[in-house]
Length: 318
Image (cartoon, rainbow, N blue to C red; front, side, top):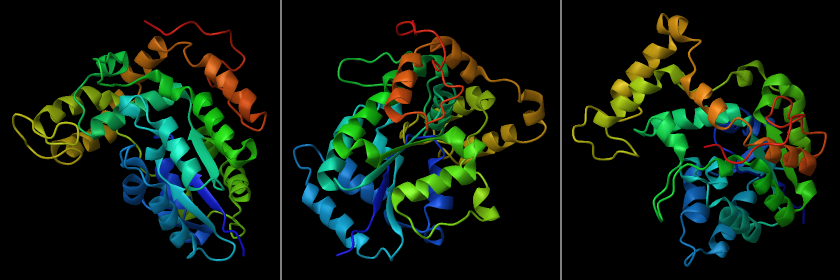
């Protein structure tokens, strides 16, 4: 019996995951999605450790793979499998072990991005879900006992990559940088198709090259977070007054205004979140990035990433 190749893309969040899901992982290019975000959540992420049933997830995936056509690769793409970035991604190892239990024959795609760019984007995503902390407080990462918050440890990519290599085998883990999609899109997606066992993919159409899911500009952050105090949202479900629901209402209206002329022209060089991230985490990820390079090898281009060709980092920034 022919074994249908299965690619599981676990994220990270904010690494062109939406583009991959909407523009590349479609039957037109030889990828057959077999589970959506809701199914991933219901069968893999949501179950309590004491009630998790790998057999239920295994059967669901097996049944879905039976519908994958010859030459195609079945794909599960859901960044929630890498853990929740607002709360430190502390479940990422548990989810990795669940996936290894459910489908040990899968091929794993892990997408990463320069930490100095991904962290501001994660904060803007936090606002999009209704967060009200300013970026200084958010990145401070001060947790009360038992209540977890943001942790930069989650973005030391080598730790999760190493775990997946141990669980699935080094040759079954593909690490993709968001920067490679920007710098050499055609070659990157070609290599990914080869890795995933996709025999149908040939070339991207022009319509599939357009970016999707772009965040609002970070100079809008002070206004957007204040709007979240008076709108209902996932992270603020019961505000004192509700003038709409984030990410719609005044939030969407303000975000659109900041994203477009004339405010975009006036404020385009203001990057308060990025400036704070660069200062606070000035060398924090350097050692991890070097370890990631060692794990994956020279085929992974981390040019521009902190620590590549730089001095050994200092301890966690104060």
